[in-house]
Amino acid sequence: MNKITCAFISVLQHSNKSYGSATLLGRQLSYKSDLSLDKIYPNARLQLYTPPPPPPGSGDKFNGYIPMDKLEISYSRSSGPGGQHVNTSNTKVDVRFKLSEAHWIPEKTREKLLKALSNKLNKEGYYFIKSDLTRSQQMNLADALEKLRSLIRAQELDEPTEPSEETVEKLRRRQEKAARERLQLKRSRSQTKRDRQA
Amino acid sequence: MAHLRESTDKALKLLRTLPRVQIGNLRPNPNSKQNDKRGRAQHGGDKHGAGNKGSGQRQNFMRLGYETGNQPFYLRFPYEPYYKGHHMRREYPPISMLQLQVLIDTNRIDISQPIDIATLCNSGLMTLKPAELQYGFQLTDEGLDNFKAKINIEVQHASEAVIAAVERNGGVIRTAYYDPRSLHILSNPKKWFEKGVPIPLRMLPPQDAVEYYTDARNRGYLANPEEISKERLVLAQKYGYELPRIEDDPNYEMLTAAKDPRQLFHGLEPGWLINLVDKTIVKLKTT
Image (cartoon, rainbow over all chains, first blue to last red; front, side, top):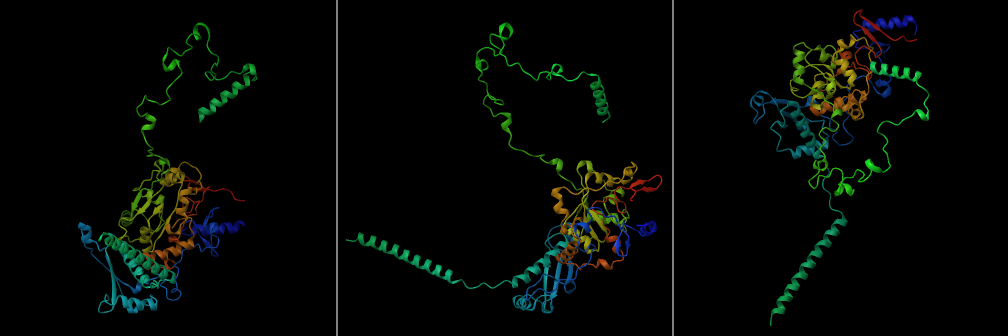
C-alpha cells in the first residue's frame, strides 16, 4: 500500500469514534490476528443480525414459535410467604390469548385444543396460563410459555394404536395357561378330599 | 537471577584454570558409595554391627511402617483429596445485575462505550486479584427483573437468564477468556502502561474452558457469530420477549464492537508500545 493510502486510512481510523474498527469500502479495518473470527468461521455472517421468525412447520406440526405480540401478558403479585419481597414485587405472570384466533397454532391442533380446553376457556374465548413458580418475573414468564408449548405439543401426540397380532396372541396364550393351571390345582384339591372319604 | 549469572561466571573462570578431567582426577560424591565388604578384626568384626540376640541380630526386622499391631499411620486415613487440583480451580468473582444497574444509574460506568474488565476495574469499585486465581467477573441473576440498560458488556461467565435480561433491553453480552497475564494488565491498565512494555497477545483458553467459550448459547467469543444471532432468537422465544432489531439501533456499531481473540484493549493492537508521558504509540515497522 502506498503512503497516500496509508495516510488516508489512518486519518479515517482516527476520525471515527472507533472501537478499534473503521469501515472502508465495506471492509473492516480493525485488528485481525491469526485467530480472528473470520479465519475460524470463513463462511459465517460476522455481524449480529435479527433472524426472521421461522416459517410455520411442515404440515400440521407446531414449530414452537409463538409471536409475542399475539399474547396478552400481565403481571401481578404472587401468593405465599416472602415478606416485603413478595408483597411489593410483581412476580406472578398471566399469559392470555384467544384460542380460536391463534393462527400461530396449526389448524388441526387448534381444533383439538378447542375441544380439549372447551371447559377452560372464559366467556370471551380466552385461554390463560398463570405462573408464580419462581421469585423472578422473567423466569415465571419462561415457565408460563413452557407450559403453553407442552400443552400444544401434547395435543399433537399420536393416539394409542391397537396392540399387534403377536401381542394379542401372546396375551391369549397366557390367559389359557393361567386357566389350565387353576383347573389343575382345583382338581388335585378335589382328589385329596375324595381320598379322605370312606 | 543475578546470583545465578555470577555463579555461572565463577564456574567458567574456575574451569579455565583447573586441570583436564581424567580418571585420576575424579571422585564420587561424598557418602554416595557404601563399602560392600564385611567388616573384620577388632572394630568391624565380632557382632558386625548387628547387636545382641533379638530380631536385630537375627535379621528378622518388622516391615517399614509397622507399629507393632495398631493401625499404622500410613493406613489410618482414607483418600481425602480436599485440595486436589485446587491450584487449577478458576474463580469468577460475581457482579449482580442489581449492582451493575446501580453503577450505570450513578454514572460510575459509561454505557456509551463497551464494558469489559478494564472498565469495571477503572470504576474503582471492583477489584480483580488474578494472583488469587480470579479469572474475571461473572454476571449473576440478582436484580435481573429490574435491569433496564442497553449495554455492550463482556464478562467471563453469565447464566442464560442473565444473557436474556441483557438482550431483552437491546444490549449485547459476550463471554471471553483472559489468561492471568492479560488479567493482571487489565485489572490496572494505567499502572501497567507505566512499565513501558509492549502490549502482549492474549492467550487461548485452557482445554476445559474451550467448550464453554466456543458455544453460541453462552455467547462465547470464539463461537460462530451466525449461531449467536440464531440463539438470540431462541432465547427471546424461551423467555417471552420480542427480540429488538439491533440492526436498526443508532448505536449498532458500538453494540457490536468486539475484540479480536488475541486483543486486550479496544483499539490497541498487541505489539504496540504506549508512551503515556509523550502521549505517543510506538508501533512495529511493517515493510
